[in-house]
Length: 91
Image (spheres, one colour):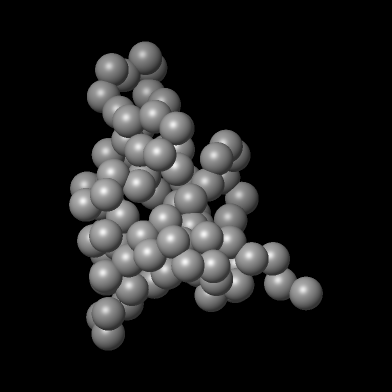
């Protein structure tokens, strides 16, 4: 049985193997800037994770609703995510 996760964009449940996991990058020497959101390809980065459908609409909705901040329980910067790496060139 595949675990079920909730997409932070559309808020629909999705099988874990059909979603991508996002995590926070490691802090750099007491850098005051918010941590960056990165694509966790191996699903092994420590800390809280957020799950997202690999679709442009879900990503844009998550950014618009500030879902990344809620999912990680802190202010984060999702602008550095390369959307094409996440959804491929078809999305």
